[in-house]
Image 1 (cartoon, rainbow, N blue to C red):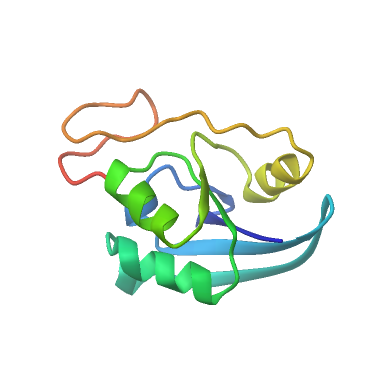
Image 2: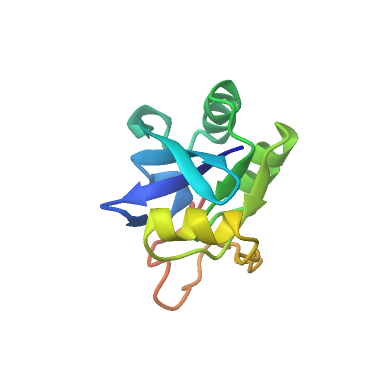
Length: 126
């Protein structure tokens, strides 16, 4: 199984749409079998483009921090499973998911309001 996480210096980037790179982990049971870092600089806030990229890479699950409802919808339309509310080291989060310890928190960025320590941005969250 392949899972992807937005990467910000080894930690889960809390803003999906502004992530400049993602780490794709190929999991074998609970172990990381492979790792690939992909640049998404040209696809920031391009939900369908990101979904197509992940699908072409064989990703089945995206583990995210904060994400907007339009982005979730685009990803799910491509058959991708979306887990939200993740934070911490990307490898530790990937392993926690493989062990069945990571549960989606239902955190969705809505436009125009703050999100505690996670999202400090204006309109256009995604």
